[in-house]
Structures are given as C-alpha cells and as structure tokens.
Length: 78
Image (cartoon, helix red, strand yellow):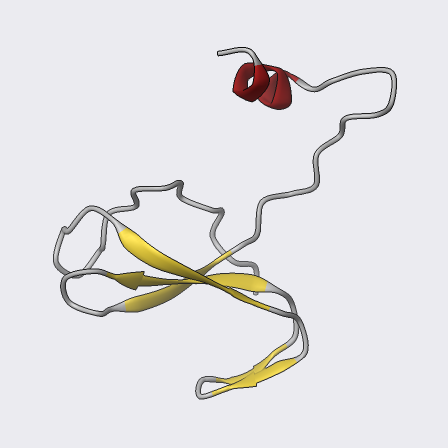
C-alpha cells in the first residue's frame, strides 16, 4: 500500500476542514499503535480535531554537484 504524497505546509483535514496540521517524522521499521510501519512516513495531526493520517516523505532531490533542479532553484532564488 502506498502512502499519499506530502500535502504541503498547510494541509486541509478531511474530517473537520481545518487548515494546518502538526507533522512528525516516523522512521522505517517502527512499531506504532496502528501496527508495524515498514517504510518511513510523515504523521500529520489536525490542529483542531486531532485526526491523524500518514503521508509519504518528500522524495530525494535530483540535484547534482553540477546542476540544480527547478524546485531547489525556486527555493534559493524566489
């Protein structure tokens, strides 16, 4: 089962509609109350109702020593 992609800094809770959530990194091979977590993930918690959901971590950047990807360029030179 694949995780949904990271939804950004201000996700919307699907239960109460609140914008914004706390984020906690969960390492791979972790035992959680929901069971064994085989892959790393980000646990999001709604700031209003407390609903929790998991999302995928941001994929690694494809930048190399000689080139910079467009995402990193946009962050460095807004």
